[in-house]
Amino acid sequence: MVQIKPFKAIRPNETVVKEVASLPYDVLDSNEARLIGDQNPQSFLHIDKAEIDLAKDYSPYAKEVYQKAAENLKAFIEKGWLKQDKTENFYIYQLTMNGRPQTGLVVCTAVEDYLNKKIKKHEFTRAEKELDRINHVDTTDANTSPIFLTYRENQTVNELLTSWMNQQEAMYDFTSFHEVRHQVWAIDQKETIEQLVVLFAEQIDSLYIADGHHRTESAVKVALKRRAQFPTVPANTEFNYFLSVLFPEEQLAIMDYNRVVDVPIEEDYLDQVAKKFDIQEVGMEPFKPQEPKTMGMYLNGQWYKLTAKPEIRSTDAVNGLDVAILQDQILRPIFDIQDIRTDERIDFIGGIRGLGELVEAVDSGKFTVAFAMYPTTMDELLKVADSGEVMPPKSTWFEPKLLSGLFVHDLESDAGF
Image (cartoon, rainbow, N blue to C red; front, top):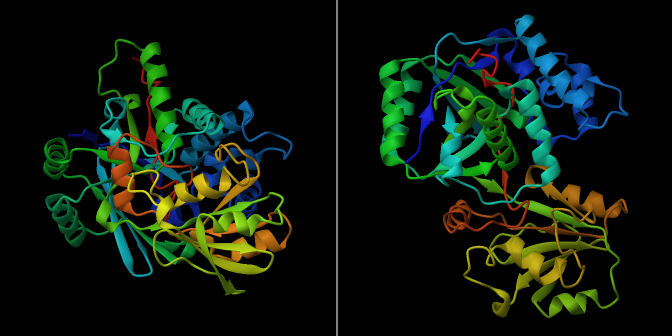
């Protein structure tokens, strides 16, 4: 069973919420973020990717970047673009994309639950990305981006949130990137807050990281650092919790997370692939897999359908994943890409960008071959996490993305304890 805690959110003034709310820091590179930031001084990217306010020769990981992020957070509050609620609340965050809503509960979750494996992961992290967010959280003394968690369906929680939304007016309601509608309600009634705390403590066995492994690890490591600095503070001190949005798993959809590779293509490459896959030429139109154990491959202006032969299929929670089959049967043995987390010859393109991005990446000459993947399912994600295993990196792409800037959690390390 898991702990959830209300908190005093730092959040946008209602008059500028659409200007402040931004795409997450990790779906934009510095150049893309700089373009947005140059056009919008109120964008939360000035806090989450503060290198956009420094000279281009600064590394995104320079200490000045994190100092600038802290300065910008303070400035946003001073200018009234952000404000802090006076009471500890929960919040409801509903995103609607293509007519499909998903409703999340915005809370603080416990560092202790992560350490005790009640909050489960399904991916490893990269050291440099983890260190980046450690420095960001440590310097701003805040969780500036929420962690996207999921849990197995609980009808009582669903009914409670639905009832609140039906009876209360949303404090935010706007449409933003990719035509996604974002609505937010504050749950400020103590009785309802306590109901939710008890429900999660008594009925929700585990939480699962859907997106945000680096943010989770970073928040936990900053908390452990604070514990060492302040060993006598109470267990419910803010830095022992991190900002999360909790969604029931049945409402979530995972999109394909595709691969592009820059390697020499040997003359017998297709013959090597044919040992493990049935290969079918499908023409010049992008091929989007419609069933598991199939993938599209774009090579030399031609799309192919690859179907995994029975002997390479597995019922194992990890080895049976389509992304694992690609990794085990093509990337490692044929291209000698042993670690896709660190090998610079491979890159990843989220399904929201469309298969045209794969074609462009190869036709431009930057990459030689692309793979269009069948999406990992929520059931597969939960099974891997429950087994204590991890998926290959970049196995899941969730849409719609939670916007950053709608909620900030103050760690209150300067509270005087």
